[in-house]
Image (cartoon, rainbow, N blue to C red; front, side, top):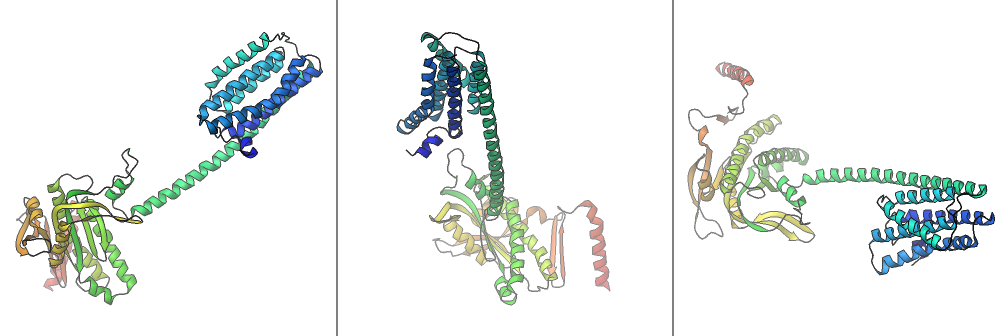
Length: 462
């Protein structure tokens, strides 16, 4: 044990690193008071001998507590309490050896209470009072006589030393408060940095994966684990995007791609999908992980997302044409429902949360087989959504990993939008593009839509 560590009191609770010097100063002041009274002939020689002992006691007690803390692995709270009781008993003995002189005794009581408050354990006061009484009683048993009067010099010295100790303690508390304020400011800065980092990190994770990664459910471990689940897997890409990438500048291409991926991601999240990854213009999304409401609901949410993406693609084409991109870009999509393995895969230094299995491969194969603006689904998916979705039988395709040909269906639209009262109407040919979404059209906008249609009709008639 180094003297530096002993002086700091590292074996105790961290607050004793500052209280140990305070104890040494307190005992030194007590020794000076006893010595002054002895020189004035008011205290006995026993008090003088006790004063010499008090010069050693704070160091000896600190050494013992340090040794016990290291060797016996005692709890610091118990060691702190033992130190308080020992100090209280010694102060009781000192009060007795001073004949319970009024001013020095009151100074000792004030010093003890202040010392306890510094430890931030007010409940120690009752036990300390008992120890103080025991120490005082022991001094009476030793034959100490009562002498409430105190010489002037001893009285003044005890008061001055008490004020000095309180002033030093106040300065110490002020320094600690400044350090606490600095630490609080540093903590606030660190929390702000972590919050900013968390927001940046959230951009690279889907909300479902983010929630499972940082939700530990009382186990201390993330909830991400590999398991088998019935999922609906979605793939999409843009037909003609590869050719467009060879014609455009990288900056312009990146702007178009990022805008497209941003819009499609918003649609996926709106329907509760988990965005797995982007591979160029390809998007992979799956439904049924996290808070699933059943395979039928997941499949319906996935198909609804695909239909909305197809509708939104018409809006994007108009936006791109306004930017001078006249090449027709069309989306194609494939969906399949089945049992997949979902979880974390990869190396210890790099993990990816994704889904694998032949059902995933089938969804990817359906996307590759789809035509422009076409949504292809497997028979498993169509069985789950056919009550609300109109589909067209597209026959069979042969897929690697499947012994028999796989039945596929083309998603036409919602059944409610195919009758006379349909809510969605779209028509797009070179030189003309129109979309009518009656569900989302506001009543106050109907007049402006009619006006625009009349202007278009007049233009065509001219």
